[in-house]
Length: 187
Image (tube, rainbow, N blue to C red; front, top):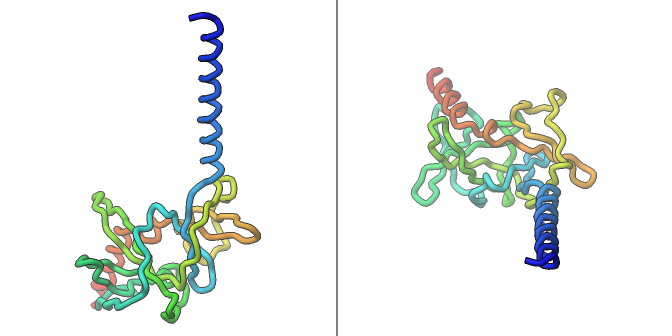
């Protein structure tokens, strides 16, 4: 190879490296996609990769001897899916069901790595938003009216904050199972 060819190859490698860096920078700036939704007038977000589907609120069968936040179960294509009232789980009042009320289905893993679908009720679904990493503040350690382990961070968008939920904590399969067992022991 002559010097001209070597120089051309080096330039191509540098261009490729710069392109890769540019793509990585753009991905870093894009951050994570969140589905935003309202619960009792507050906006929350959940990572979109957790969301399996969004359903119109329909028939939910109440299960006796379960905690108040467990609204019941639904039949989803032949599978029994528990439905959590997110407002109650977050320590808020139960809202009335409206035509905008939805059930968001997420896939959660149990401690035994078993995948389980769980639904949670929200007042309405807003939109999918990109939240750049540099626009996510750490979860506050105090001053919130929900458990701090339920919050993964605070997303800064425009002129407001969105509470980004840590779905593994909010819908912890192990914790929900323990609470159901404790509730049933009362009777």
